[in-house]
Image (cartoon, rainbow, N blue to C red; front, side, top):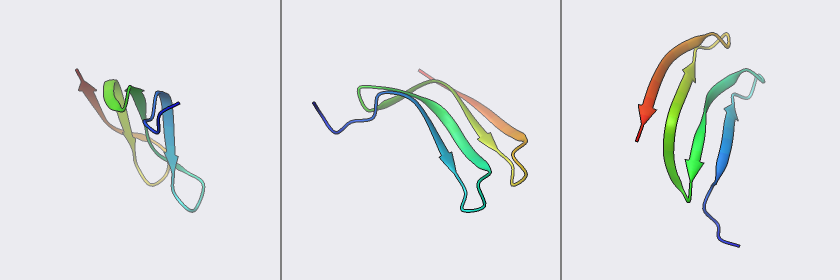
Length: 49
């Protein structure tokens, strides 16, 4: 087992609202990544190759 992230990940703020979500493959960000505003609303979408 390696220490690289793989699969779907989510990050949360201290207040419990989602901050960012996206996928990793063998430690590299891939596909659609979403950044959320402070109230949990979708703020920005980025596509990673």
